[in-house]
Length: 270
Image (tube, rainbow, N blue to C red; front, side):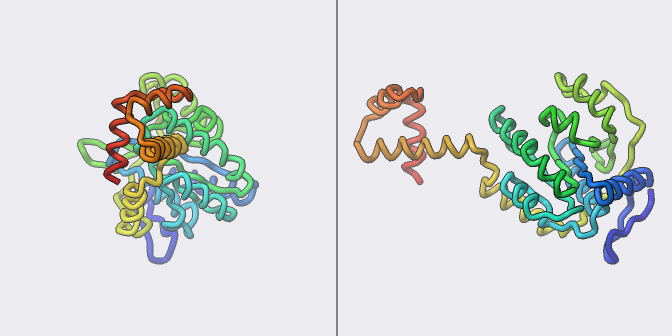
């Protein structure tokens, strides 16, 4: 490992081979009119965010907390307001999104922003629980590498890198069972637990994003709007739950009487 110092007041250890590869990425982005997309995945608490920050800071010393995004709105804003060579981190892009619809919407966002990333010559780091959640286009054709972060005996600080070709094989052969052992890579390394942005402010920003539920996808927002509309009809016209159920059915909205009862009770409390 070598010591890298992106800024005068910050130094940390980095794998030497990783450093050399990141130098090539910087040169390619800044001098050859290209962009780069990295993926970092791994289990909860494995250190994905810390490692992502270290890579980001080395790639661009101007990287700061403003470049760390926790939801779609922040990500789009960061991309739109970026300049050439900026590094944007989409941290835990899929966290808390359990439904297929929600996952599809995040993937659609990533795909739709790819052209903007390329035109602006950006470096984007996507941090998520598993590489296999990614849209095939992003995983196979746009991401230049996958870093799988893992722990040994409860201690974090390890990663294994799958290059462009190896990650394709991994995705195609391992996706069904989420199996990371279908192909091997000798490109491995360690990292230390050192934040490159203010840890306290980072945690506060992440907590605020989660608490405010800014991660809501379009489908979640539409459901919320539907529920408010149904409650308004129920309250304004004094319908019974049975009548409201029939009303919904008449317009092709299939929602049961018990479901209506729960959402009406929940909105009454608010």
